[in-house]
Length: 256
Image 1 (cartoon, one colour):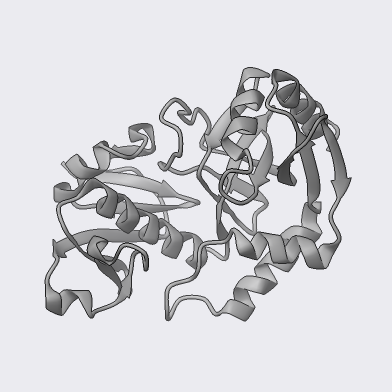
Image 2 (image 1 turned 90 degrees about the horizontal axis):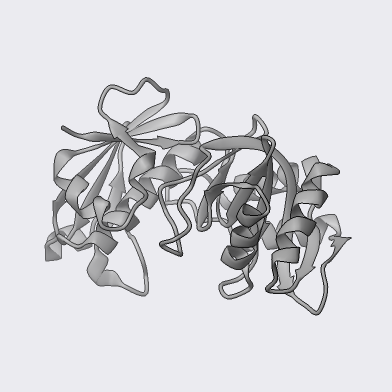
């Protein structure tokens, strides 16, 4: 039996052959038995990787061309990939990206934790401490949406994903209301300060997954980032690698 992945407010139908590969990389709680209701819908299918196929569509990862490519059709994403769990994960991420973009949203390389249904979205470059802060926030009573990839939709909701950076960080929450967006940096003590709107938009776009050709233009993606930054703002979140950072984050979200 195939599986379905919740992608924002939509659903991606994953063909049977990809399921064993995805089981090795993804959080399976986000993959449900076929039959789950949802709209809009996409179907993710796979084809063997070949020299001819590699020239079709767009590369899943420019740094790893061996992972193959995907083509985006009307209601289907076709992946030309090897039988590799990392390539399958990249193909599913591409399908989630297409689905979120079609819903008017933005897919971010970010972590998100919810407190009482209010989401803290944590962005920053690799190594900045997104997973570390997410772990501390969970220890302080938060519910994890993802420590790796989250979708932000026009409805004001933050949606988790089946992707993760750290194996021990398993999502326990599917979606929550957007309350705070922070850019995390390491420092000697916890503090927050507002980020000016133009810089907030630049930083959001820096962490947004790039739209595949033929889906959403860069100006449209920038317009979405402007709307998101204007909705709740962005804050520079300085913190230590300490449980106190999670408590500080909880209180900061509670004050939103």
